[in-house]
Length: 340
Ligand SMILES: NC(=O)c1ccc[n+]([C@@H]2O[C@H](COP(=O)([O-])OP(=O)(O)OC[C@H]3O[C@@H](n4cnc5c(N)ncnc54)[C@H](OP(=O)(O)O)[C@@H]3O)[C@@H](O)[C@H]2O)c1
Image (cartoon, rainbow, N blue to C red; front, top):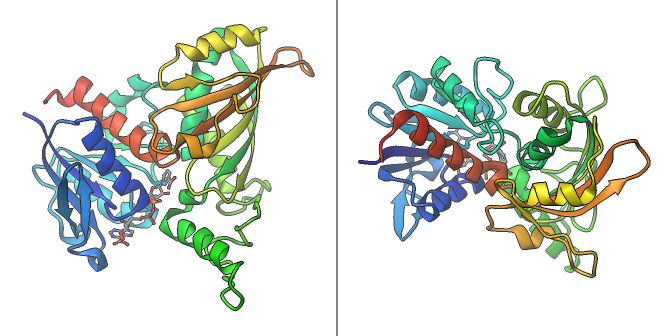
């Protein structure tokens, strides 16, 4: 016997990837429902070799359904996730709405799987921000060995992190650059994104950090260790899919770059590609559609006592969202629901 699974936001970037990944990983599904807003009623989406017709989230009855994977943004999540949870369906949510609630677990299965037990508090589990998810997969095995004191991270985040509208804006603006009269003004992004980079993701906070930067700080503390100090600069770049991060780490103890490479090679969810030659590293276009978080450019930072630099790349729609959510569903199945 398998699970009755709902995917809410099935017409979106993350929702579509969730359906792909559930099929690819042969998640034990007995029945599946694809939900979106009323305007998408009847839209067809793929689930493996099947085609599903989307239903309206607003009128859906969650009674009798086991797991709901939500990717609808915070506003719609606020309205519908409590209804699903109250009906006995465990919600795994991709928005930021519940991530900082101390009663709700925030999980990256390779890092803090034991937090799953907390799901019982509200029948809701939160999925982290895309930039955090890939970074903590890399930090955890290194932290276990040499205790991380401080992290300085700069991100290079693709436009798909801003949803369907982000992808459309980069595409239309790029085409418009070549056709006189068809220039596209910024709308989803604050400045031109084609052939440009923008050091601003999400809203500004009083501290001067953006909310995206704050999320990386708060989520790393909740998932890995509250003692780790993080400072982040998050930048949108004209890449369709795949987030990259330059991560500088300061440890309590010395960690040699060769040992760090070996630790990362055997760590779950990571693939090390680190040759000191032309092309001996991974770039975002190569990570698209992959499950792994790729680590390259591992090297000592000799400007501090115990420092290391690395380059981290992953498919933000997968490890940064849909894959991590499906991995949480797998963990929930194995540890708690035990069907399938
Ligand atoms: N993209 C990423 O890298 C990433 C990473 C981590 C987390 N997330 C989070 O995942 C969520 C979805 O992101 P996305 O990139 O997939 O966005 P998206 O491509 O814009 O898709 C949004 C989805 O939500 C549905 N939706 C929106 N409002 C709704 C409502 N009121 N009722 C029912 N359905 C509604 C949309 O349905 P319609 O098509 O009918 O409008 C669509 O299916 C967001 O919370 C985002 O922050 C995204």
